[in-house]
Image (cartoon, rainbow, N blue to C red):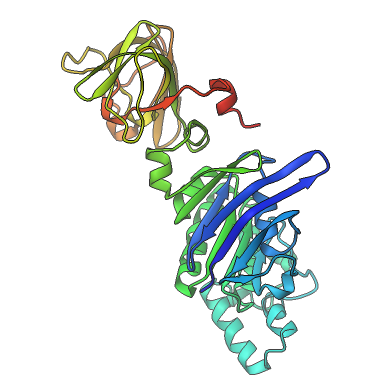
Length: 371
Protein backbone atom coordinates (compact mmCIF):
# COMPACT_ATOMS: atom_id res chain seq x y z
CA UNK A 1 0.00 0.00 0.00
CA UNK A 2 1.03 3.61 -0.59
CA UNK A 3 0.29 6.87 1.21
CA UNK A 4 0.67 10.47 0.04
CA UNK A 5 1.42 13.71 1.88
CA UNK A 6 0.95 17.11 0.25
CA UNK A 7 2.43 20.20 1.91
CA UNK A 8 1.68 23.79 0.89
CA UNK A 9 1.05 23.24 -2.83
CA UNK A 10 0.58 26.42 -4.87
CA UNK A 11 0.15 26.62 -8.63
CA UNK A 12 -0.60 29.68 -10.74
CA UNK A 13 -1.23 30.21 -14.45
CA UNK A 14 -0.63 33.89 -15.11
CA UNK A 15 -3.20 35.74 -13.00
CA UNK A 16 -5.14 32.57 -12.24
CA UNK A 17 -4.28 30.76 -9.00
CA UNK A 18 -5.26 27.12 -9.40
CA UNK A 19 -3.95 25.98 -5.99
CA UNK A 20 -3.44 28.09 -2.86
CA UNK A 21 -1.26 26.57 -0.13
CA UNK A 22 -2.96 23.15 -0.23
CA UNK A 23 -1.96 20.51 2.33
CA UNK A 24 -3.42 17.01 2.61
CA UNK A 25 -2.60 13.57 4.03
CA UNK A 26 -3.89 10.47 2.25
CA UNK A 27 -3.58 7.23 4.17
CA UNK A 28 -2.33 4.00 2.66
CA UNK A 29 -5.25 1.97 1.30
CA UNK A 30 -7.66 4.90 1.40
CA UNK A 31 -10.24 5.67 -1.27
CA UNK A 32 -10.23 9.47 -1.36
CA UNK A 33 -12.49 11.55 -3.62
CA UNK A 34 -11.88 15.18 -4.55
CA UNK A 35 -14.91 17.24 -5.55
CA UNK A 36 -15.76 20.88 -6.13
CA UNK A 37 -17.15 23.25 -8.76
CA UNK A 38 -15.53 23.61 -12.19
CA UNK A 39 -12.22 25.47 -11.98
CA UNK A 40 -11.78 24.87 -8.24
CA UNK A 41 -8.38 23.17 -8.68
CA UNK A 42 -9.29 19.52 -8.06
CA UNK A 43 -7.74 18.20 -11.28
CA UNK A 44 -4.67 20.43 -10.82
CA UNK A 45 -4.19 18.97 -7.35
CA UNK A 46 -4.43 15.40 -8.58
CA UNK A 47 -2.15 15.99 -11.57
CA UNK A 48 0.39 17.62 -9.26
CA UNK A 49 0.36 14.53 -7.04
CA UNK A 50 0.70 12.33 -10.12
CA UNK A 51 3.67 14.29 -11.48
CA UNK A 52 1.88 15.55 -14.60
CA UNK A 53 1.93 19.16 -13.35
CA UNK A 54 4.87 20.76 -11.50
CA UNK A 55 3.66 22.99 -8.62
CA UNK A 56 5.22 26.42 -8.09
CA UNK A 57 5.56 25.87 -4.35
CA UNK A 58 5.19 23.04 -1.88
CA UNK A 59 6.19 19.41 -1.57
CA UNK A 60 4.72 15.98 -2.31
CA UNK A 61 5.74 12.79 -0.52
CA UNK A 62 4.91 9.20 -1.42
CA UNK A 63 5.48 6.92 1.57
CA UNK A 64 7.72 9.63 3.10
CA UNK A 65 9.79 9.80 -0.10
CA UNK A 66 9.92 13.31 -1.56
CA UNK A 67 8.81 13.14 -5.19
CA UNK A 68 8.34 16.86 -5.92
CA UNK A 69 9.76 17.55 -9.37
CA UNK A 70 9.99 13.91 -10.43
CA UNK A 71 8.07 12.73 -13.51
CA UNK A 72 5.13 10.35 -13.78
CA UNK A 73 7.35 7.42 -14.69
CA UNK A 74 9.29 7.79 -11.43
CA UNK A 75 6.24 7.66 -9.17
CA UNK A 76 4.97 4.15 -9.91
CA UNK A 77 1.33 5.12 -10.43
CA UNK A 78 -1.70 3.98 -12.38
CA UNK A 79 -3.74 6.73 -14.06
CA UNK A 80 -7.22 6.57 -15.58
CA UNK A 81 -8.30 9.56 -17.68
CA UNK A 82 -11.82 10.88 -18.25
CA UNK A 83 -11.29 10.39 -21.98
CA UNK A 84 -11.05 6.62 -22.35
CA UNK A 85 -7.48 6.69 -23.71
CA UNK A 86 -7.01 3.16 -25.02
CA UNK A 87 -4.68 2.27 -27.86
CA UNK A 88 -7.14 1.72 -30.75
CA UNK A 89 -4.82 -0.64 -32.62
CA UNK A 90 -4.45 -2.95 -29.62
CA UNK A 91 -6.87 -5.58 -28.34
CA UNK A 92 -8.15 -5.55 -24.76
CA UNK A 93 -5.48 -7.99 -23.60
CA UNK A 94 -2.75 -5.96 -25.35
CA UNK A 95 -3.97 -2.71 -23.79
CA UNK A 96 -4.03 -4.24 -20.31
CA UNK A 97 -0.57 -5.79 -20.84
CA UNK A 98 1.05 -2.56 -22.03
CA UNK A 99 2.34 -1.23 -18.70
CA UNK A 100 3.85 -4.56 -17.72
CA UNK A 101 5.43 -4.92 -21.16
CA UNK A 102 7.12 -1.51 -20.85
CA UNK A 103 8.45 -2.49 -17.41
CA UNK A 104 10.02 -5.62 -18.88
CA UNK A 105 7.92 -8.12 -16.94
CA UNK A 106 8.45 -11.64 -18.29
CA UNK A 107 5.78 -13.04 -20.65
CA UNK A 108 4.69 -15.78 -18.22
CA UNK A 109 4.35 -13.41 -15.27
CA UNK A 110 2.67 -10.81 -17.48
CA UNK A 111 0.18 -13.34 -18.79
CA UNK A 112 -0.82 -14.42 -15.29
CA UNK A 113 -1.32 -10.86 -13.99
CA UNK A 114 -3.29 -9.77 -17.05
CA UNK A 115 -5.55 -12.82 -17.03
CA UNK A 116 -6.33 -12.22 -13.36
CA UNK A 117 -7.12 -8.57 -14.03
CA UNK A 118 -9.41 -9.45 -16.94
CA UNK A 119 -11.19 -11.92 -14.68
CA UNK A 120 -11.63 -9.37 -11.90
CA UNK A 121 -13.02 -6.80 -14.34
CA UNK A 122 -15.28 -9.35 -16.13
CA UNK A 123 -13.45 -8.72 -19.41
CA UNK A 124 -12.24 -12.24 -20.21
CA UNK A 125 -14.75 -12.71 -23.05
CA UNK A 126 -13.55 -9.44 -24.61
CA UNK A 127 -9.83 -10.20 -24.44
CA UNK A 128 -9.37 -10.25 -28.24
CA UNK A 129 -11.78 -7.36 -28.95
CA UNK A 130 -10.62 -3.92 -30.06
CA UNK A 131 -11.77 -0.68 -28.38
CA UNK A 132 -14.05 0.40 -31.23
CA UNK A 133 -16.17 -2.75 -30.81
CA UNK A 134 -16.66 -2.32 -27.04
CA UNK A 135 -19.39 -0.51 -25.15
CA UNK A 136 -18.48 2.60 -23.18
CA UNK A 137 -18.55 0.64 -19.94
CA UNK A 138 -16.29 -2.11 -21.30
CA UNK A 139 -13.82 0.46 -22.65
CA UNK A 140 -13.62 2.20 -19.30
CA UNK A 141 -13.22 -1.12 -17.49
CA UNK A 142 -10.33 -1.89 -19.84
CA UNK A 143 -8.71 1.45 -18.99
CA UNK A 144 -9.08 0.72 -15.28
CA UNK A 145 -7.70 -2.81 -15.73
CA UNK A 146 -4.65 -1.39 -17.55
CA UNK A 147 -4.00 1.02 -14.66
CA UNK A 148 -4.48 -1.66 -12.02
CA UNK A 149 -2.27 -4.14 -13.89
CA UNK A 150 0.63 -1.68 -13.82
CA UNK A 151 1.62 -3.10 -10.44
CA UNK A 152 1.51 0.28 -8.70
CA UNK A 153 -0.10 0.68 -5.31
CA UNK A 154 -1.30 4.17 -6.22
CA UNK A 155 -4.25 4.78 -8.53
CA UNK A 156 -5.35 8.18 -9.90
CA UNK A 157 -8.85 8.41 -11.40
CA UNK A 158 -9.64 11.63 -13.29
CA UNK A 159 -13.44 11.74 -13.83
CA UNK A 160 -13.19 8.05 -14.84
CA UNK A 161 -16.95 7.53 -15.18
CA UNK A 162 -17.96 10.92 -16.53
CA UNK A 163 -18.34 9.77 -20.14
CA UNK A 164 -20.69 6.90 -19.28
CA UNK A 165 -24.48 6.90 -19.03
CA UNK A 166 -26.04 7.06 -15.57
CA UNK A 167 -26.93 3.37 -15.18
CA UNK A 168 -23.51 2.11 -16.29
CA UNK A 169 -21.79 4.71 -14.12
CA UNK A 170 -23.69 3.63 -11.02
CA UNK A 171 -22.83 -0.04 -11.50
CA UNK A 172 -19.18 0.56 -12.38
CA UNK A 173 -18.46 2.88 -9.45
CA UNK A 174 -19.20 0.07 -6.96
CA UNK A 175 -17.11 -2.41 -8.95
CA UNK A 176 -14.27 0.09 -8.99
CA UNK A 177 -14.30 0.61 -5.23
CA UNK A 178 -14.51 -3.12 -4.58
CA UNK A 179 -11.50 -3.83 -6.79
CA UNK A 180 -9.41 -1.05 -5.26
CA UNK A 181 -10.16 -2.35 -1.77
CA UNK A 182 -9.64 -6.02 -2.66
CA UNK A 183 -6.28 -5.26 -4.27
CA UNK A 184 -5.12 -2.94 -1.48
CA UNK A 185 -4.60 0.14 -3.67
CA UNK A 186 -4.66 3.75 -2.55
CA UNK A 187 -7.06 5.63 -4.84
CA UNK A 188 -7.46 9.36 -5.52
CA UNK A 189 -10.65 9.93 -7.51
CA UNK A 190 -11.68 13.30 -8.97
CA UNK A 191 -15.35 13.69 -9.86
CA UNK A 192 -18.04 16.34 -10.34
CA UNK A 193 -20.72 13.87 -9.20
CA UNK A 194 -21.57 14.41 -5.50
CA UNK A 195 -23.67 11.24 -5.33
CA UNK A 196 -20.75 9.23 -6.68
CA UNK A 197 -18.41 10.74 -4.08
CA UNK A 198 -20.81 9.99 -1.21
CA UNK A 199 -21.30 6.39 -2.38
CA UNK A 200 -17.71 5.20 -2.78
CA UNK A 201 -15.37 7.33 -0.66
CA UNK A 202 -13.63 6.66 2.63
CA UNK A 203 -13.13 10.43 2.80
CA UNK A 204 -14.11 13.35 0.60
CA UNK A 205 -12.08 16.50 -0.06
CA UNK A 206 -14.16 19.55 -1.01
CA UNK A 207 -12.40 22.36 -2.86
CA UNK A 208 -13.32 25.92 -3.77
CA UNK A 209 -11.22 28.54 -5.56
CA UNK A 210 -7.97 26.59 -5.25
CA UNK A 211 -8.33 25.76 -1.56
CA UNK A 212 -9.55 22.81 0.49
CA UNK A 213 -12.60 23.96 2.45
CA UNK A 214 -13.56 20.65 4.08
CA UNK A 215 -12.32 17.06 4.49
CA UNK A 216 -14.16 14.21 6.13
CA UNK A 217 -16.13 10.99 5.91
CA UNK A 218 -19.20 11.14 3.63
CA UNK A 219 -21.67 10.85 6.52
CA UNK A 220 -19.85 13.51 8.50
CA UNK A 221 -19.74 16.01 5.64
CA UNK A 222 -23.38 15.47 4.77
CA UNK A 223 -24.86 15.43 8.27
CA UNK A 224 -22.57 17.92 9.99
CA UNK A 225 -20.75 20.00 7.33
CA UNK A 226 -18.12 22.30 8.77
CA UNK A 227 -18.82 25.10 6.28
CA UNK A 228 -21.88 26.58 4.64
CA UNK A 229 -20.31 25.90 1.24
CA UNK A 230 -20.03 22.18 2.02
CA UNK A 231 -23.68 22.08 3.02
CA UNK A 232 -24.64 23.80 -0.24
CA UNK A 233 -22.39 21.80 -2.55
CA UNK A 234 -22.84 18.32 -1.10
CA UNK A 235 -26.50 17.57 -1.62
CA UNK A 236 -29.39 19.97 -1.12
CA UNK A 237 -29.92 22.19 1.92
CA UNK A 238 -32.21 24.87 3.35
CA UNK A 239 -30.58 28.02 4.67
CA UNK A 240 -32.44 30.38 6.99
CA UNK A 241 -30.93 33.74 7.90
CA UNK A 242 -31.75 35.12 11.33
CA UNK A 243 -30.66 36.85 14.51
CA UNK A 244 -30.12 35.30 17.93
CA UNK A 245 -33.02 36.49 20.06
CA UNK A 246 -32.42 34.39 23.17
CA UNK A 247 -31.48 31.02 24.62
CA UNK A 248 -33.45 28.15 26.12
CA UNK A 249 -32.76 24.60 27.36
CA UNK A 250 -29.11 24.81 26.31
CA UNK A 251 -30.00 25.88 22.78
CA UNK A 252 -30.66 29.08 20.86
CA UNK A 253 -33.75 30.89 19.67
CA UNK A 254 -33.45 32.53 16.26
CA UNK A 255 -35.67 35.29 14.98
CA UNK A 256 -36.06 34.32 11.31
CA UNK A 257 -38.08 37.12 9.74
CA UNK A 258 -40.65 37.07 12.52
CA UNK A 259 -40.64 33.29 13.11
CA UNK A 260 -38.96 31.94 16.27
CA UNK A 261 -36.80 28.91 15.45
CA UNK A 262 -35.37 26.82 18.30
CA UNK A 263 -31.99 25.18 17.65
CA UNK A 264 -30.13 22.83 19.96
CA UNK A 265 -26.65 24.09 20.87
CA UNK A 266 -23.94 23.20 18.34
CA UNK A 267 -20.75 21.81 19.94
CA UNK A 268 -17.75 24.11 19.62
CA UNK A 269 -19.65 27.22 18.56
CA UNK A 270 -21.18 30.03 20.62
CA UNK A 271 -23.33 33.04 19.83
CA UNK A 272 -24.26 36.31 21.46
CA UNK A 273 -27.68 37.86 21.66
CA UNK A 274 -28.57 39.91 18.52
CA UNK A 275 -25.79 38.21 16.56
CA UNK A 276 -26.56 37.41 12.91
CA UNK A 277 -26.48 33.70 12.05
CA UNK A 278 -27.49 31.13 9.44
CA UNK A 279 -29.47 27.97 10.26
CA UNK A 280 -29.20 24.96 7.94
CA UNK A 281 -31.43 21.90 7.69
CA UNK A 282 -31.44 19.13 5.09
CA UNK A 283 -34.73 18.69 3.15
CA UNK A 284 -35.05 15.10 4.40
CA UNK A 285 -35.67 16.40 7.92
CA UNK A 286 -38.41 18.90 7.07
CA UNK A 287 -41.77 17.33 7.90
CA UNK A 288 -45.07 18.22 6.23
CA UNK A 289 -48.62 17.75 7.52
CA UNK A 290 -52.13 19.02 7.02
CA UNK A 291 -52.51 19.84 10.69
CA UNK A 292 -50.20 21.57 13.13
CA UNK A 293 -48.30 19.32 15.53
CA UNK A 294 -49.06 21.02 18.83
CA UNK A 295 -46.05 19.39 20.49
CA UNK A 296 -43.54 20.56 17.87
CA UNK A 297 -41.11 23.34 18.78
CA UNK A 298 -40.67 24.51 15.20
CA UNK A 299 -43.97 24.37 13.31
CA UNK A 300 -44.59 26.80 10.48
CA UNK A 301 -47.57 27.29 8.16
CA UNK A 302 -46.89 27.39 4.42
CA UNK A 303 -48.23 26.77 0.92
CA UNK A 304 -46.84 24.17 -1.50
CA UNK A 305 -45.37 25.92 -4.54
CA UNK A 306 -44.13 22.89 -6.48
CA UNK A 307 -44.18 19.11 -6.25
CA UNK A 308 -41.52 17.18 -8.19
CA UNK A 309 -41.39 13.41 -8.63
CA UNK A 310 -37.77 12.18 -8.51
CA UNK A 311 -38.28 8.44 -8.81
CA UNK A 312 -37.47 7.27 -5.29
CA UNK A 313 -38.43 10.54 -3.58
CA UNK A 314 -40.83 13.44 -3.94
CA UNK A 315 -39.51 16.98 -3.57
CA UNK A 316 -41.69 19.85 -2.36
CA UNK A 317 -40.96 23.57 -2.36
CA UNK A 318 -43.04 25.30 0.29
CA UNK A 319 -43.38 29.05 0.81
CA UNK A 320 -43.73 29.73 4.52
CA UNK A 321 -45.88 32.47 6.04
CA UNK A 322 -42.75 34.50 6.80
CA UNK A 323 -41.85 34.46 3.08
CA UNK A 324 -39.07 31.91 3.51
CA UNK A 325 -39.08 29.09 0.93
CA UNK A 326 -38.10 25.67 2.27
CA UNK A 327 -37.52 22.37 0.48
CA UNK A 328 -38.82 19.05 1.85
CA UNK A 329 -38.05 15.57 0.51
CA UNK A 330 -39.78 12.29 1.27
CA UNK A 331 -39.24 8.66 0.20
CA UNK A 332 -42.28 7.34 -1.67
CA UNK A 333 -43.08 5.02 1.24
CA UNK A 334 -43.59 8.02 3.56
CA UNK A 335 -45.94 10.08 1.40
CA UNK A 336 -49.20 9.96 3.34
CA UNK A 337 -51.07 12.03 2.47
CA UNK A 338 -49.70 13.33 -0.82
CA UNK A 339 -49.60 17.10 -1.28
CA UNK A 340 -50.20 19.15 -4.43
CA UNK A 341 -49.23 22.65 -5.49
CA UNK A 342 -51.46 25.17 -3.73
CA UNK A 343 -52.12 23.01 -0.65
CA UNK A 344 -51.76 24.68 2.73
CA UNK A 345 -49.48 22.64 4.98
CA UNK A 346 -47.61 22.83 8.25
CA UNK A 347 -43.85 22.34 8.22
CA UNK A 348 -42.10 20.82 11.19
CA UNK A 349 -38.35 21.34 11.59
CA UNK A 350 -36.82 19.12 14.31
CA UNK A 351 -34.42 21.20 16.41
CA UNK A 352 -31.87 18.36 16.63
CA UNK A 353 -31.41 18.36 12.86
CA UNK A 354 -30.74 22.09 12.51
CA UNK A 355 -27.14 23.31 12.33
CA UNK A 356 -26.11 26.88 13.06
CA UNK A 357 -23.31 28.91 11.50
CA UNK A 358 -21.85 32.35 12.06
CA UNK A 359 -23.12 34.74 9.43
CA UNK A 360 -20.30 34.93 6.84
CA UNK A 361 -18.40 38.21 6.62
CA UNK A 362 -18.61 38.16 2.82
CA UNK A 363 -22.37 37.61 2.90
CA UNK A 364 -24.39 34.43 2.50
CA UNK A 365 -24.66 34.61 -1.30
CA UNK A 366 -20.89 34.90 -1.71
CA UNK A 367 -20.21 32.13 0.82
CA UNK A 368 -22.47 29.75 -1.11
CA UNK A 369 -21.27 30.81 -4.55
CA UNK A 370 -19.61 28.22 -6.77
CA UNK A 371 -17.13 30.82 -8.08
